[in-house]
Amino acid sequence: MPAQRAFVIEFSSATKIYKSILGRSVTAVEDFSLSVEEGEVLGIAGPNGAGKSTLISLLLGYARPTSGTVTIAGESPREYVEKRGIGYLSELMTINPTWTTESALARFAVLAAIPGSEIPQRVEAVISQLGLGEHRKKKIKALSKGNLQRLGLAQSLLRDEDLMILDEPTHGLDPVWTQNFRGIVEGLRRPGRTVIIASHNLDELQRLAD
Image (cartoon, rainbow, N blue to C red; front, top):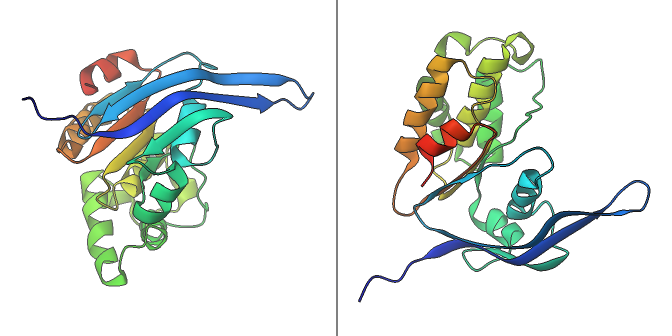
C-alpha cells in the first residue's frame, strides 16, 4: 500500500467576512478548502484583493474564520504558533530605524526564543546566508529597499522552523538576489518542513513551488 500522506495544513470550507468602516460585509475568502502536505513548497498567487493576505492572516492566527476551520498539525493556528513557532516574512516589515542590521537580528532572535548562548552563532549564520556582512553595522534607515528585504528574509530563517510563510519574499530584490532566493528555498526543502510563498511573480512561483 502507498504511504499515507501527512497533511500539516487544512483549510476546510473556510470563509472570512470583514466589516467595512461603513458597516458593509466584505467577503475576503469564501468556502475555501485546501490540504498542504509536509515537505511541500506551496505557491499562492492572485491579483490584489484576491484574498492572499487573508489566507496568511488565518494561518498565522491573526484572524479567525467566520465559518469553517483552519488547522495546522491538528491544532488551531494560534495554538500551533504559540507552541512551536513559524518562520514568517511579512510583505512590509517595520523595524526601528535606529537599530543596526546586527542588533535587529539579535532582537528578533530573542523574540524567537533562541537561547542566549546560540544567538551570536545564529545571527552570524543568517548574515552570511543573506550576504549582509558589509551592512551589519548600518542603521536600518540607511538600508536600501532590497537590503531591508534581505534582512527580513534573514530574520525568518533565524530558527529552524517546520513551517515557513514568506509573503512577497522577492519584492525589492535585484536580479542577483532573486536568483539567490531560489537557492535559499531549495535549501529549505526537507521532508518535515512546509514552505508557503505568496507572490505576484508567477514566473518565480513556477520555478519554486510544487
